[in-house]
Amino acid sequence: QKEVEQNSGPLSVPEGAIASLNCTYSDRGSQSFFWYRQYSGKSPELIMFIYSNGDKEDGRFTAQLNKASQYVSLLIRDSQPSDSATYLCAGTGGTSYGKLTFGQGTILTVHP
Amino acid sequence: DGGITQSPKYLFRKEGQNVTLSCEQNLNHDAMYWYRQDPGQGLRLIYYSQIVNDFQKGDIAEGYSVSREKKESFPLTVTSAQKNPTAFYLCASSARDSKETQYFGPGTRLLVL
Image (cartoon, rainbow over all chains, first blue to last red; front, side, top):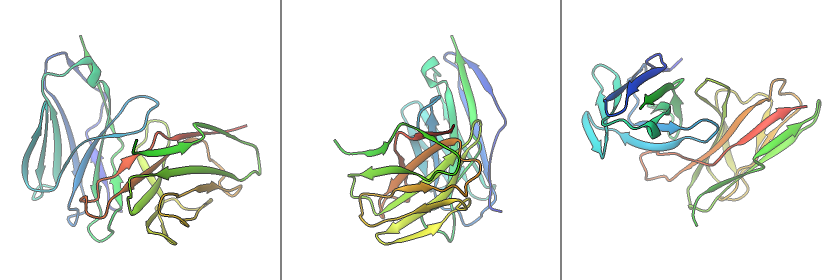
């Protein structure tokens, strides 16, 4: 069973702090990884994708990928209360085009 | 206004009834997907389709059926064989050249009466 595991939550950080969300995956063939944000009762919205080793930055968000360690992370700088949501990590299947495997999600709360 | 639409927003199913959830996209995406989300859980793939008139089972296809007669549409039927259908159903689509990036519709919440 190919799996994506996210660090157990919930995670609580103060406003202005850095929130660190982590994800490991078991399928070495996985090529692309995605972070989605899901507000309560809503559908997931894409924050970032990453498919090369290293860091990728977009505004306050930085995704990090380490294929040797099979590890993906999302850093949120200057966290805001509006960042409070469930964050889903997903990876593609190496031999199954288009199939994403999702982690169970990490609940983030940013308190003022 | 491009995007993915799902209807209805809420759906109630009676015992032994088949119900169909609608998913339409005007993004000209080739691939479409159906996921199920249970409270506090991640998303699990039900069915996916990469091209018109072709679809494949996902991880939890039992009790569900789909069709893909048009590129824009990928309806999901929850049959009476699905004994625990209460969940949040999400449709997604992706373009062939987009590194498999999937975008989601607003979802349909299915409840059993």
